[in-house]
Length: 114
Length: 116
Image (cartoon, rainbow over all chains, first blue to last red; front, side, top):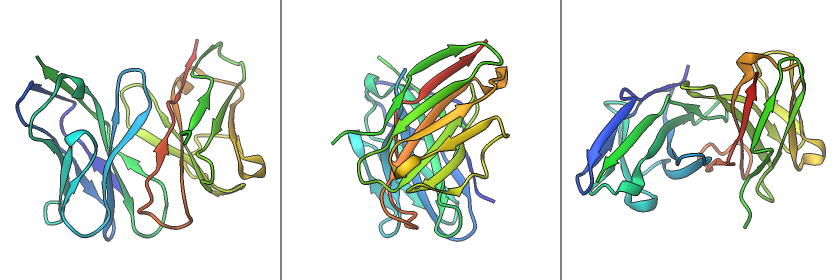
């Protein structure tokens, strides 16, 4: 069975500081991993994905994520947080074989404090 | 290029009524998905169309939910009769290609359903 865990419901960070939003996954075989962001009263917006290759993936708005196979993690990071980064972040996984749909975590609310 | 569009954006209905949600995928995307997020919970898969065919409907909660994708273009999701626990955000999404799990799935703005 596939699943995603986002252990933190809420992350607070000061503007200008680095941020990390954690994600661990469980899947049979190799995973495809995704991060989406939901701004207030908006839909899900794609940030980045890991398919294969370099473990460090760069995405939109200066975000990046590092795939760690041994720790089954795919943490989202940004070197310097902006107030406008405040939103709900979802990690998702899809297996290479089998079901083609995404399995999501419960989401982490990021608040960047001015 | 237009993204995934959903209608209505918000809907408030009474228990027992019927609601139909519509989704227009990105042009040329064969794959169309419906997902749902109930307040505070994870986003859950409902079903997946490839063109007009239902590829996977394992996430549909019960037979009060009916999804169609006539002609392989837009899709509708009907809830009849609606219950209180159906309240939540219904996301539609689409992606290119068949069987390629690495393709990005693009989501719409969601249809926010409140059943009172």
